[in-house]
Length: 441
Image 1 (cartoon, rainbow, N blue to C red):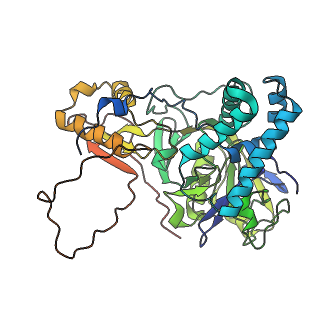
Image 2 (cartoon, helix red, strand yellow):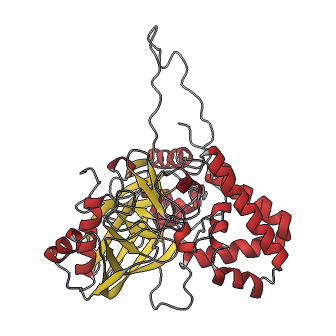
């Protein structure tokens, strides 16, 4: 079976009833148009992780990277890996794909740490500690840049919770949020679906250059495709087909990721993709029009409607100005005078006191300036939202007597904790503007 390109192997598969997601560019037949008690300090004193934190590598990610000839060439030239070593890497990564297929574990909300640990063990056994570290660094760098080399002239904004002063898209992965800024003003916010732990969204700076209407889809050679009735790896599914998961619009943002529609409202705010930003169809239509306007591109609602009516033909709209897309991983955000602590969904160990201090100091606030209650609440939130929270003492029976025969309801998953820091005014990153939560079907 043909090994697909890196871009194809990270495609979202969106099946509303099956809660599946997937992305790819595939061959495009396009017509171009110019249009509790406080945790002890030791529990929170791991080395600070910043906005440059890498998600690190998993075996499914490695399997996709090894199908990219440019990446394999870098393994040979920069790491001096032999053909035998590269073949061994392909074997172990393919074996992991087979395991996922057999257990149907690829699309579960699993533990990111376990996936990375399996990858680390395999890399060390094949390459040794030093080469394994080098490969991980190379893979993360290649992935974060979307396979592009050289200086694009635009950089990630420095510091935590940085607010753009230009036109750009900011995606904060653990917040399941995407913002569009135009000339430094936040004009629209969207709740999004993000990549599964085995296929996490990359971190880093990308750029949007085209809007593709009525995209075709080429299923990658991946476990989740094997479960589809009408999809065969390598065979193109045409635009508008009911088995095409990309929806009516996709916006490439560099290998292996897309921003695209077709998602069920039930997947917004959850794991929903294989390395892409997932939106519902109404969301992606709205985003595409605002993105074109922000980039100075002449693209009207009427033109979009006419393109979408002609579902058999793919249309590509080139943006007059590329728009930077920041893929951030910030689990601690000072927003509009409130402290938001998000779940460390990819197990990056970012919910630390060190990072909390960095975020506060970036906005002119010291941790010691907070009240004792606020400090306690903040440290407890860091522990609760960490990838591996430490247990806290349960209330005594005397403190909270249970009613006889009462059944304890299971706790709902908690993705964020908000602490109101009175007296900080509007300091921090801006609150959502016209938030689109994707509830409209």
